Image (cartoon, rainbow, N blue to C red; front, side, top):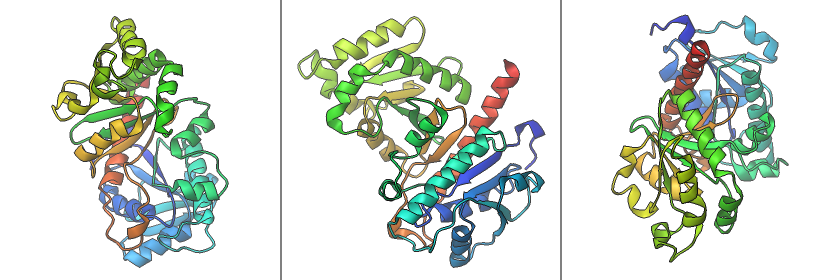
Length: 345
């Protein structure tokens, strides 16, 4: 595929949990993308990648690199050859096994890959799935990719957004991985105005949407039915909409139960859900195979597939790479948009 030099991107995949499906979906995605004109790099474990390449008999040659200083001498596009930067090697590889060793490999891979993006050696990071229990066993305090990257780059509250590039459906979460009982208080404490303003700017920069249309869901059933089932809508969400209505194209709060069923999401560029399952349950029903997780608000581009490690099918060769493939394409799209924004400004 012919693309202009200014459009070429170098994408780094972090390996995720080496006992999950990450290595498999990376290899399968590479086979689909190697002729795209972009270049690809895996950051993590060469032995894990080679284990799955052999086990699944995939037609990829893995080029091992032991130091990031060697990356500059590696050709950017080599047909059939995927570069692997070895940053952490597991003692053994057992598909489907929960282990601290695998959790450490996943997080060291993430750290090194993000650093490559920080230094400008790569244009975007696409993270393969990790297992939260495994990284906890390895001694990491963060609950996952988003929190770790937020801490690494000094971003207090990066925004977790889910995007289906097939339907162009976007769902952002006001709160992320917290117990449901803590959601109301966190909504009250958060700076909702700043969250929405930052979200609006990210949509302009990363997706080139000139004037984003934003819909806010209510927190309570039926958006509280005028205060019968809660007061967050009247006290927090609606006032935020009113304050920002002269600066943003924003509406709400909408009752969450009928919003997706009535396809009202088609009238907006993004829907903001108040908590995790409120947004992700309908999103995964509508876009289970093609959904992509995008972290907004970071100085680097980061996307990931919208699924977990799938330990139950790891190493069996039956994992679908569709979400990883779409996540990589979205990462390229955002990286190109950021480059274009930088040129225009």
